[in-house]
Length: 187
Image 1 (tube, rainbow, N blue to C red):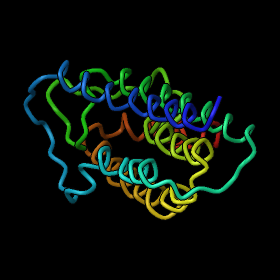
Image 2: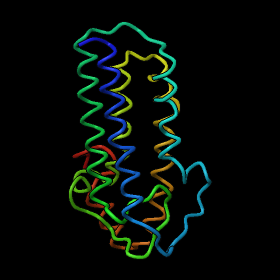
Image 3: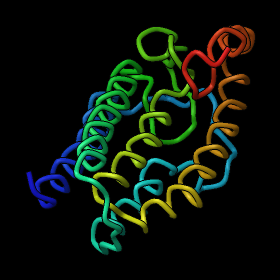
């Protein structure tokens, strides 16, 4: 397998997440708001904004040589992470949304990947970026992941947790006490 095939594999893995988001948006349809987040626009639109470093790194290859085994491990991590994030999205079903708003029919999901961590989509996105960094041998993506994706994700999690606590109250509080934020089995 050559570098081009590895890059295509990573790109296809990213599309698992993109297509899941689009499909869920269509399935969900229009709903009445129950709670509108007051977070800044850039936090509301985290999902598309967090992919910018990957797109830039894919188009502008600033590479470092890595062993083929590390590249292959990166592809496996990227694909597994994309599937994990998509599983989390599909587990939310009609409760999925890009913005941090709560809608009519919104429910607190605590099964599937949400038994492992409270934010499996974000875990999947972060680990996808790490895997893509190794698969594409991208120094640019490594720097962007460390300096942009990780802090941006941390800020989004804090803002989203406020909304979920406000919307679900003690049910979400109990979930917080029982399930770790982002690192499986951290308790």
